[in-house]
Image (cartoon, rainbow, N blue to C red; front, side):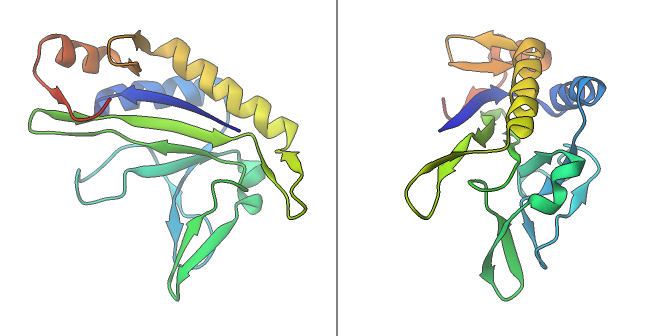
Length: 168
């Protein structure tokens, strides 16, 4: 099973969300890929160059960094295995030139083991991930029309018709 929150957040909305989460829970941000099966720490959720960098990053508790599992894609590239790793995948929104594509938070609660039996992820991880989801929902605005959450700035842009939603 998995859990997901869809959202529309501007860069400023992400700053506010990250600050809110950092004040109430503990996590680090890591890249979704690596050249050597070791997590690459990122300082913030900030997208420095829209359209030129991967929008997907991950939240992980410091104590779970060594539990992050990577899948080898080729000789020099590995991607995080979302199914088995104790991470929350965060896809940041794409926003440029009047268009807005949604982002999301996503995590899996468990998986089927090699014998086909369901195995829940660690209870401490699940409690932390649910806390992050609850804090995120509480700090954003629910928009039933687009079936997603928004930040304050994104809400203003959407309400004023200044951006077009690319996906819902």
